[in-house]
View 1 (cartoon, rainbow, N blue to C red):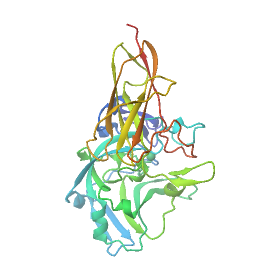
View 2: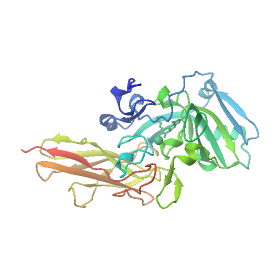
View 3: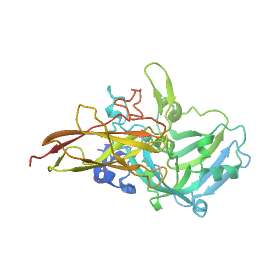
Length: 353
Ligand SMILES: Nc1nc2c(c(=O)[nH]1)N[C@H]1C(S)=C(S)[C@@H](COP(=O)(O)O)O[C@H]1N2
Ligand SMILES: [Mo]
């Protein structure tokens, strides 16, 4: 163990160095995940901390290159959004054969309130050239990746339209406090609705580019690469519902069980969550789905279940979003194991009497 860190107490650590860690089941009971329990996904070691004098540069294909310190950004009008973020690799170990990469199980997902400056305001101040095709974001962290000869930074691009979405934020606070180092201090991008890789942590520069970006984390990773040779970029989160309580392997007394969980999708609001309690059979019954506290936050759902008797039971749930997309029994296998939104069972044991 090179870096057990404090994270062993608060998370289920997937890999200690650099730290990659899932949310523990009890932290998923909360609508907003406390910052110190939010899942952590880091490709490289955390960069050193910086202060309010850290600059954020915006350049490239713009009429007026700009630079703001963190302190200057903090003085601007801020916007707060509650956002559910899931790692594209969540559920990777559910694919067979298991793709290479961090062995994420099913809890690389969290929700937080992010506060910051809408990116579009900064882009407007810099006056992006009409020839720009995308906006590129660079994080301060770096390391060896792919076949690059030296260390590279974590870099990702966004299409102009998504970069200009008023909900795409340069965030300076998480759950009302400064962003902790592991989540991108002092400032990071937040791209609601997209899998986590788009939300670049430790943001240090923004560049308007006139050619599509083909860097490692855009082109060699975070693409669905299928066995038939086709591929597509990983973007919005697929619909998914999870059971938060009872927890897996719970032993419960006889009587009605209130099953609860969350459901989300980057493709739109959740239209339905259904529950199947019969193990192998496919009788799906509707759960009650609540309106989320914000447009980008997960929906609470509940279902009152009367167990048919004592013994082992298999509980399953599945979400359908407003685009009509429903969680599948099996997600399509892809080389790096992204986007596995397959239905995932929870096992519980009901006591006799
Ligand atoms: N600079 C930087 N940003 C990053 C990453 C990274 O390794 N470096 N990982 C990305 C991925 S894959 C995810 S899922 C989210 C995780 O954010 P979190 O650690 O705050 O949960 O950050 C994204 N932003
Ligand atoms: Mo991720």
